[in-house]
Amino acid sequence: MTNYSPSDCFRLPFVLTLASAFVIAAPAAAQIAVSAHENKVVNVDGTNKVVESPPPDNAMILDIGVSPPKVLGQVNLGASVVGVPQSVAIAPDESIALVTAATKLDPADPKKTADDNKVAVIDLKASPPAVIATVEVGAGPSGVSFSPDGKLALVANRSGGTVSVLTVSGKTVAPAGTIDFGNPKSGPSGVAFLPDGKRALVTRDGDHRISVLNVDGTKVADSKQFMVGGIRPYSLSISSKGDVAVFGNQGGGQGDTDIINVIDLKQNPPRIVDSIAVGQTPEGVFMSPDGAFVAVTVMNGSQRPKAHQAFNDHGLIKVYRVEGTKITPVTQAKVGRWGQGIAWSRDGKTMLFQAMIEKELQILSFDGKELKMTGAIKVNGGPAGIRTAEK
Image (cartoon, rainbow, N blue to C red; front, side, top):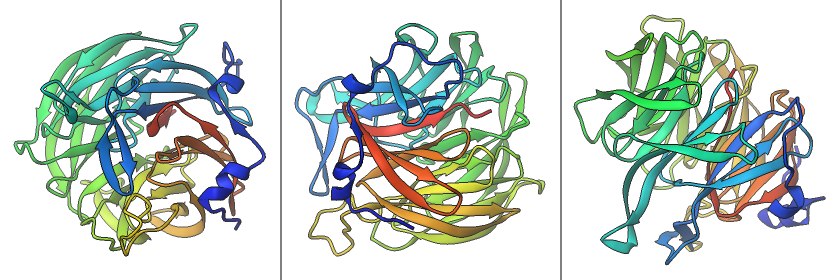
């Protein structure tokens, strides 16, 4: 395993800028990724501070089906570091993307932020890509996911205790209902469909539950079945095989080691069957496209004040092998600070990692055994959410 310190990230073979990496259109074999960037809030020595008169939040559209990845364009929209890094979703046919905005500048006091309730719709087929609509959902929208057939999307409204149901027809996205968990402080955070499209899971970091939703066409309902595993279940990812899901727990935030859990989806109802310690604050959990591995972004205290006893000057990516309902460590690598999400390339050989403090998408190669840092793409803002199409 090759590890790099944060300073090594800036001495790697190439560091791409938006200008040098920009291309007009994606090649035929493109794999689209969308990375959302927050400009309203920055981390200053472990304290999140609101930026005075910030530039717009934005999203970058990339092709990660090539090496190195290429930047295809950028659009301005609302985005937020508040919530899971699955705050972006891409339709299975890569025609549109959704980006949630959990927060905005407080209209009554621009030195503060307040809950937002918007989801931006990006037309990925337009040249250049463009925001074509904004849909209103519940308070503090966080995780968002498309159904496997692309006809539905679910949005977990973390501040509202609800899940919004959206119908999708071509590039038209419309509200179609709300699931209310009956507890405004339940904190719905991550949401994901099972590959058969008949069920979905929602993590609830406010009351420590993982809810099971039933899906019948455009009708989505709370099954009332739930699981409990760890403190503050958060980021969630489901294997393309449909056999397991993995989610992380934010824990108590005191610098203790936190865990990720495995859900056996073949059981009815689904049940948590395994867990493993991963370190301080597993922010993002992302299954590889083939379901063979799961990558976890671990903040590792890198978002804390330097004087804090739990501070480290780097974050971590940890990769685990998935074998049935068991996960075993494979490798790890040092990465940037206040890390958020990961996008896997379709062949599983490349990862894009979101480093908030460095304002970079750090590029890593993976050969099934080792992770190696190979470069970085500078971005306009703190990268806070990222996704590829889940097929």
